[in-house]
Length: 153
Ligand code: 5GP
Ligand code: ZN
Image (cartoon, rainbow, N blue to C red):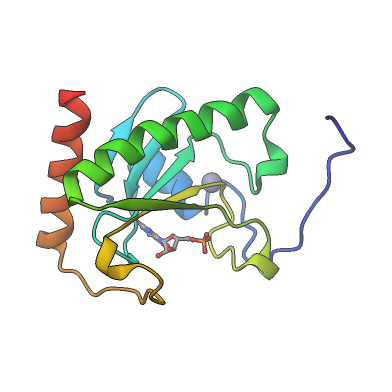
């Protein structure tokens, strides 16, 4: 289904040179990267809802899913699906959520397309999740486990 390209309001819109995720892609900002190929990147959320909360993004700047063609949307979610297996294995979670926010009204804070992969343990079932305060060392340890799981599979 192809429609006219549409824009969603987002006061967080920025040009790629100022975009936080583009800057991570370019290596200008640090991130706990767990996966990277020529078109996609996955790294830990700096302010996670659970241990292992990962963001999967196309490297090319686009604001919302509507800025991507159908093929690339498919690839993004296939990449997120592969990453989710490693995230779940590395964290010992029992399930995971994909969250993908588009536009300010949907709480999109970083205006560069991304899929959240949020692992969830059974004991967290049904609970409202709060952002965790994790140390850089804890993030690094989790990222290492996810990278190791991706390398094994
Ligand atoms: P959104 O609300 O746009 O779907 O989610 C953006 C996510 O990006 C948030 O969960 C936030 O914690 C995360 N985030 C924002 N800035 C940075 C950053 O500089 N590095 C990393 N790793 N994550 C970030
Ligand atoms: Zn960007």
